[in-house]
Length: 530
Image 1: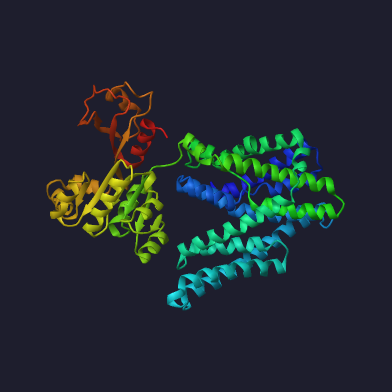
Image 2: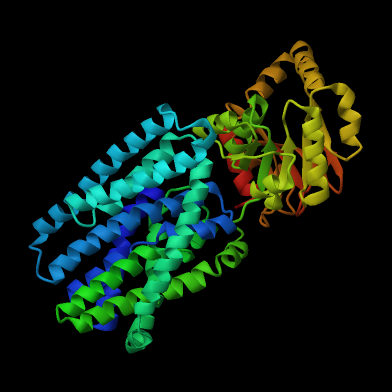
């Protein structure tokens, strides 16, 4: 979805907004196109703070963040090209493409070179052990300034593309002290944006907004309720996003600092060129959309997410070692939102490089658990190799957070009683190994099949929520279940039993499905639609 949002979605946003401005405000085409280009950008400066308080699924967050970062760059460059055409410094369509490609190409090239230089410096240069995190932060900041200044020196407005490229490259290759650098970036961003927004707002005259009249309101309504949902649903065609997730992305697309700052700069230059009407329309329309989307979409983002039920319950695994990662693989494979909590920085980096969501922190510390999302966790699993740490983590979660269940790995069988006194369900490494070996001796076929769960066969338990299937017997449902999938167990009112052909399914039953992997997944969707 992210790729289509920054390609197909950007084109729809540009075209739709341009048409809305042209016909609602009656502006000339170039002014409408300039506004349309600027309002393509959603921007990480507003999206990232929203995602920090609205913990949606990683795929939704990734789509919004990618859209914000990339569209900020392309929107700024396209807007510059249209601005040059508007003031008579540009040529035809061929020159338009050339100017865009030139700025983007220079930005990507300079950004890539700077990213490579910073990466080598962080990885292989001695940054002074005592001050390494501080020096790493300053090195990255210097890299950002060099990337922007160097690219902008070669071609105006290429700097934005250079900084974005450098940031994307460094974030994906993984660098030392990444968390410290991210925190530093957040602090710098907060200070700079506060200053910039205040100054931009001081330059805006409220009368300019009022002069837009009904046309301005129509543009905002078109952008928020027509254009944005259309581009999201078209971009998400065929993806595994639920309807609710698409709606959330549709109604959380606030515009940020790039449209505001560039529109203000262009408005000043247009006014100096004697185009005061175009300047007022430009800055008024852009700020009106920013104001509406930031206040309503940004301010109500959590309420929108809760109403659409797109905030997933997390599964937190304390311990990012071999056991924790193996468990995360199985849970993520069936769609769970898993976060590993690990205090060993080397383990954290290794987990992140392997594609896991890993939080650097102590699983026995309340604030670290809260930062990892324990307030919104359905299950917490203590899976370290230290029973004392696992017990302390289980006690902390039990007394502090409202989770459905707490599970713990027990390395010494003699410690099982201590965990069970807390009501914590345990898995003893020793007993689990013995039971697995016994299964291979007594039940080899079943043991082999169970060992391949998630690859060939699968067993899943879900809650029955499909109204059309409630009240029907297992025999009646049989032909409707996909392929090899079978209902093996039904849990109801605390009792679990193997169903007969005449057993009737009821709302809220916990149903265990067994069968081939893909058939089980399809059956889950039928019995418990998203």
